[in-house]
Image (cartoon, rainbow, N blue to C red; front, side, top):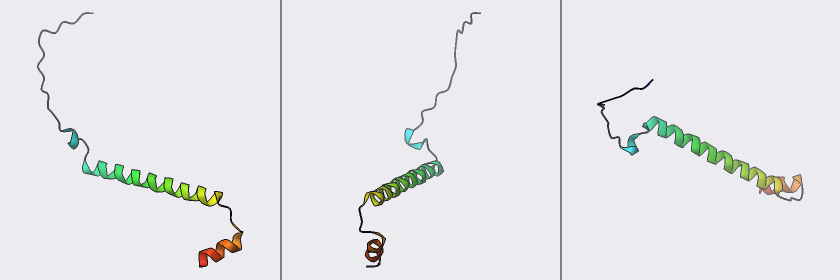
Length: 66
């Protein structure tokens, strides 16, 4: 089946690309990114702690108390 269109009428609106996100959406994105950064930093701290060679639990407790 062939369709021929002789004329098209349309309205096009220009939108500022900076206004595409609602403030609530942007806030949610920022919160999620900050949570992901915090999770990554906590993971890195945990990895460093697991890789650290210590003198034992007593030495760790004494260091923490000091």
